[in-house]
Length: 72
Image 1 (tube, rainbow, N blue to C red):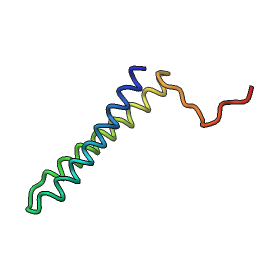
Image 2 (image 1 turned 30 degrees about the horizontal axis):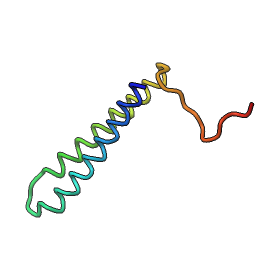
Image 3 (image 1 turned 90 degrees about the vertical axis):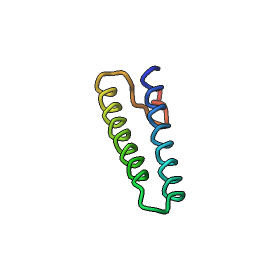
């Protein structure tokens, strides 16, 4: 359950970074690089999230499942 909470928090961080970069892109009309910093942070968190999911799957911390349960 802890790993799922960490994944959820990281997904929320990605969304917050996207929202912040959109806000700075609209608000800052001059040549600031805050938007680039927010998008770089989003990419770093996304890569870390992908690695975390990959490692969690192979360590057995999370189990994949389909949309339909297997027939009994």
